[in-house]
Image 1 (cartoon, rainbow, N blue to C red):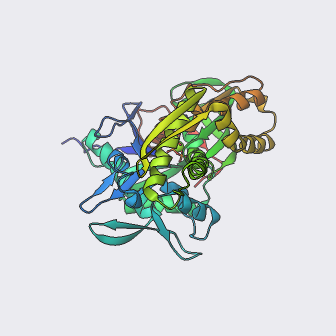
Image 2 (cartoon, protein in one colour; image 1 turned 90 degrees about the vertical axis):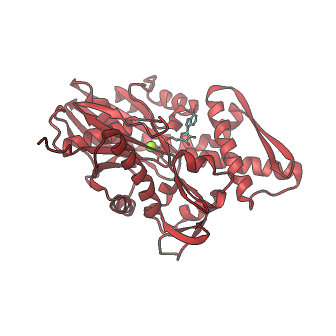
Image 3 (cartoon, rainbow, N blue to C red; image 1 turned 135 degrees about the vertical axis):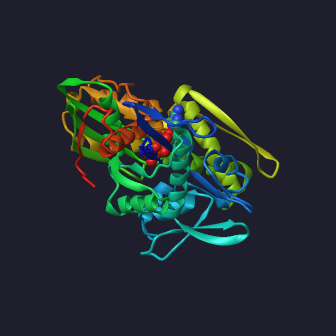
Length: 396
Ligand SMILES: Nc1ncnc2c1ncn2[C@@H]1O[C@H](COP(=O)(O)OP(=O)(O)OP(=O)(O)O)[C@@H](O)[C@H]1O
Ligand SMILES: [Mg+2]
């Protein structure tokens, strides 16, 4: 009788989206969800009749804003009284509760009953979805996984991620730092014979961080890490939301900030405006019936947009230069994460790296999951892969 297959998967557990990958016959493969998408929105929603995860949850967010949870990674391992949790609470449509030194709890109504859920429980629902996505594709049970975390996560946030894995019935083989995972994905497919100093910049929905990594032969060594888990695309969207809430109040004498439905609709429109501004010098998005029968158009030039969030980039680049002087040494800059599509980051970073512009040699949306899958396969003893050594600065 053939032995049942035992596979280990890699999950990129992002603030905005999740992505799952697996190594099969020596090749890394991103696993599509049941809708044929390679990434799944990090959304969980509760209704009178069911619990929704992924696209289905995101698609009904504006209709059910108080019971649709997103960006939960931002509060993993945090205390309710932490400044970042208080700020988060103001920016989302759902409610949080908790004691100052206790964990925040998310309050939702599910099947007509009030429920309180921890960040770990909500994250476990996302992990279960990703595990099931892998099981459907592979046709076998999956329990072993490597989960990704920001390099800048502290020990409480890492523990919360491990706990979420346990709640989801996953045997967490290891956590892998997200920039490291991208470097692993970069190295797995090639043989670098000379020593190469690379800078991985990961700018996602919830964080902006960079790792200095040395790649030699089949060895990936992290030299240093710099960044923040409280600055990401989500925060840029919220700067835009604040701007347009003020503009709306000035024009229409209505304060929308206490209306979750309006705020969530504005958030979605601002995210769209931001993406359009990555491509165009100016852009606009119409929101129908934002308040009563008022149709509201949000419009902005890229220059104005840059002036609104530019200090996030400057703050990061100043910290980066302090932590990693002599930026011109980097033979390669790898860009990972959706927010690296913002032209301002590339523009300003290229100047600092003396013209060494970021390479598009890894897929910005998939590299972290691929690296996590390679690490999972190595830990599970998959001998279809070439040996690869990974030395990280935070060996959790
Ligand atoms: N074209 C674009 N221009 C600007 N921002 C973009 C673009 N495309 C996607 N984004 C932003 O990228 C972010 C999502 O990136 P990504 O999917 O890498 O995040 P994540 O991995 O879920 O989060 P994290 O790694 O921070 O936990 C969102 O804030 C999204 O608005
Ligand atoms: Mg990410």
